[in-house]
Image 1 (tube, rainbow, N blue to C red):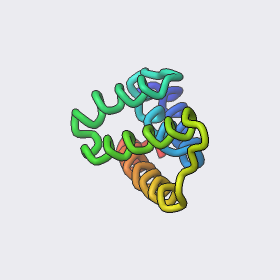
Image 2 (cartoon, rainbow, N blue to C red; image 1 turned 120 degrees about the vertical axis):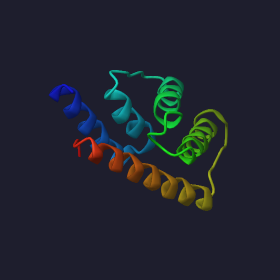
Image 3 (tube, rainbow, N blue to C red; image 1 turned 90 degrees about the vertical axis):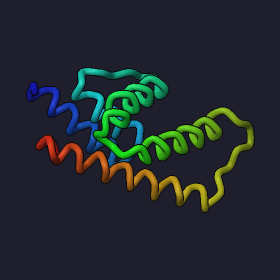
Length: 111
């Protein structure tokens, strides 16, 4: 694996610590030389090549789906306000996802 690709994956993972799920997926997808600015493409690729293949548990797909749905509500619905319980759950799920990706990248000696 190219050192530049590893460095980019590490950078994206470090960014994900602050921005969470989307950048975690991008950090993993980078290792396959795949990237996109569209959330839907990042999600589809990650699910197809990393969840379905067993790199990540199927539960991670549910975390991604829930976060994506919450983001869409927040971005596109007028007057949408997430409850504090919803926000806490999203943070917990993002932390769980971040941990899964960190473990994966550690196995590859990236973080």
